[in-house]
Image 1 (spheres, helix red, strand yellow):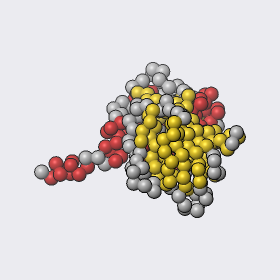
Image 2 (spheres, one colour; image 1 turned 60 degrees about the horizontal axis):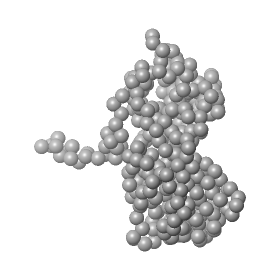
Image 3 (cartoon, one colour; image 1 turned 90 degrees about the vertical axis):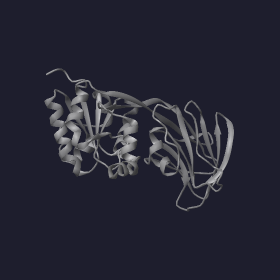
Image 4 (cartoon, rainbow, N blue to C red; image 1 turned 120 degrees about the vertical axis):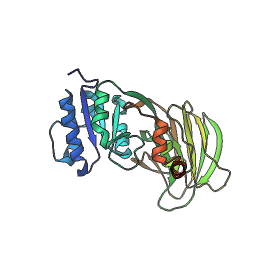
Length: 296
């Protein structure tokens, strides 16, 4: 049997017992193909099998591919943890929508086998580098694959922010909040807020207001070479969160600084992957037209 294209594979799963059968079957298949396999430590606990369990830093040092079983939330967590290690990721969808986990569970062995045979494509996705400053002090430094959000907190009142791009004043906004989304995140929270869908190769970020107080406030896309600054002008209660994981309470005057990270995420896709075919399936584009054609 020829040497697999990826010989050291880490497995990361959704933290529910339901993934156990799929994950154990995948581990067996990979070993049969000649791969050395490790399982992320929390995933191993969930499936009740501590064999070859490792943490994310150990995965970064060991793996030349990480395979993620679950949905987009599981992929987001894995991507954030492995970004600095530059480990490419492949996603097997065992969640709901699955924009980032594009291998169907029923096609798992065929698609993974094709990847191991060297029939795959690699797609690079941009990350946001996010920093919150309170005066001269850094409150938080993190990365986001989907989006950074400044929003109202538990009080439910509008907040007011000022937006600057490369130091130039853009506008002051009163709204429930503001999303800054990467192309990957343009099909997540930003899509629900009527933001634009950005093809992954587009070098841009989308700024999407959340329920703005004026109807003229519209989403705008800016170059991902831009430095974006969001200043909290006033709020009874405000928060910033990143991919739904890192959460920080904001105070008046806090500054959120966003730019493209020097790190990036690399997704490994099986043969036949198409971004627009994925959108048609997940967003049910053309569904009505196809039904009409079937009835004619």
